[in-house]
Amino acid sequence: MSHCHTTIHSLRQLGFRITPQREIIIETLAHSDAHLSAEELHQRLQPRSKTINLATVYRTLDLLVEQGYATRLVGKEGKFLYATRQHSRHLHLICRKCGRTYPAEYEGLQPFLEHLKKTYGFEVEVEHLTFSGLCHDCSQSI
Image 1 (cartoon, one colour):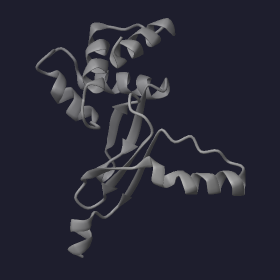
Image 2: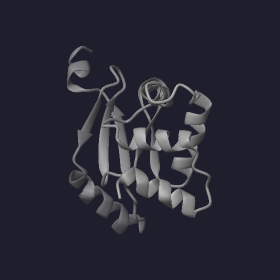
Image 3: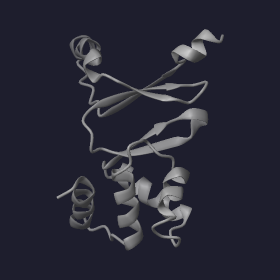
Image 4: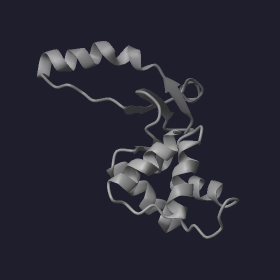
């Protein structure tokens, strides 16, 4: 069973109604190769279904985040970006000037996470972490 169908099946098992619109939204988000804003996701849906409105996209994304099937991160200009949790733990570096997103290796965080656990007794659950700052190009133009 593909990731999106597993999510749909799990939501049904939890008692949520899966409309054809919700199903298309979940499939489109799960098969995306990027984190998308609600507006970008809505645009990608238009060729498949002109009847899905932006409010339905937002409600479905909220449901996915609340139930733990998707993550929400803050992108450029404070806009929320969404992705399903199909990937393993991962990091993103987002340039606050140009808005580009760069993937980063999770393994580099391990010493810091172990420090937090040892020092504070706090075990961080990292699924999706984002750091904002300036990319190489933007930092050179300052």
